[in-house]
Length: 121
Image 1 (tube, helix red, strand yellow):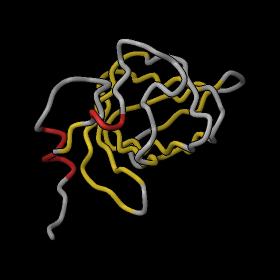
Image 2 (tube, rainbow, N blue to C red; image 1 turned 90 degrees about the horizontal axis):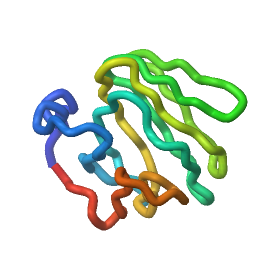
Image 3 (tube, rainbow, N blue to C red; image 1 turned 90 degrees about the vertical axis):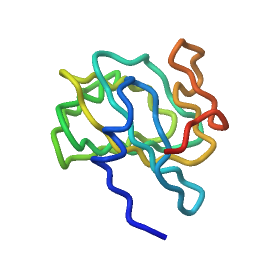
Image 4 (cartoon, rainbow, N blue to C red; image 1 turned 30 degrees about the vertical axis):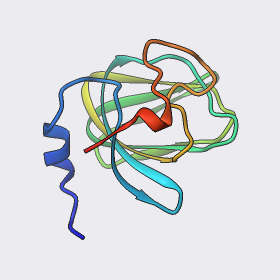
């Protein structure tokens, strides 16, 4: 067992919108990901999704409002709620999601990564 250094993990890759698994607990993955620009509108029918901003600024767009997040702030998107993250510049984000979550939810997109294909770093 050892501590996980999030800054180090995030320095190990450069691609954006490609989550990396850095931990697992109670049926949840702990993921780090770099956001830049706009993501795709999507929802997760059965899972909530938590976004914790470590570096940068991220808006979580919902159909009826926008949640603005800065470093140290998080937001939980309830299951079934359509959303789209937008990063203003490069942002580093920590995600907590059930291990079965498909990153683009019900949408097929170039960004789609199946849960079993996620890289562990």
